[in-house]
Length: 309
Image (cartoon, rainbow, N blue to C red; front, side, top):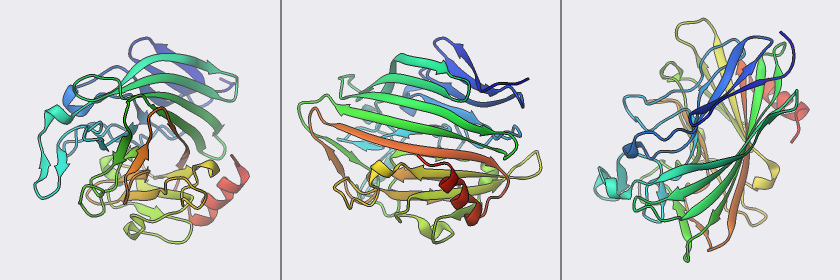
């Protein structure tokens, strides 16, 4: 088989992307609503390497609302669009179903492939538990640079979220609510259970001590169960994200854990709330590289240099 990635759309359920050269289903984008307690929202699972190994977790028993790679809002003006228990300072995590909202699929603007790249462009609406329209999102997911010889492929995720309330939207996290080193919100990856205890690498350091730091990219390497070998996922900010905030954007910091599970998020509200005024749009673009093997810092840097934005 030859040619670029192929699309299969099961309407009302999911879109899958397959590499015809290897026969591997690289990803499934699931937009069918799921359990209300888990804050329904579209997600990517499974993600697979070109060798066919799965590199995402789905509904693990510790956090049923962790689903592959998804965009989340754990604390949004008092609402929980993340799922599960809500963090309340001084009381811990509480079951507060009246806080749990959703991100609803509103329609696709484009589902297409041009030979080398697949594009899934979607419209979504964001809602608190009571159902009002709080935000509209335009999302674009692109699959590209599929390289069987090099054992890697990449996806680019762009989200533009517009505040449709008459008051500001406040994006926060458990850390902005008082819990240390729990700044998860925004794009969030949950790794498979086997990736627990994996290797975390940044441009200038390694290990879980990179939690809360700023860097243009972060990588996570884990070893598979079931099949031999490792996989590396590289998460990178687009230049316009201005992740340090030096040019006026809200600063971003990495949320990353290897214990008790593998997770990475380029958090957009780690230490400070992000305020989005009525009618304003928050736009962020990220790249995720999925690679077979245990990539070292030099390999990661070379890949990013030879695959510019």
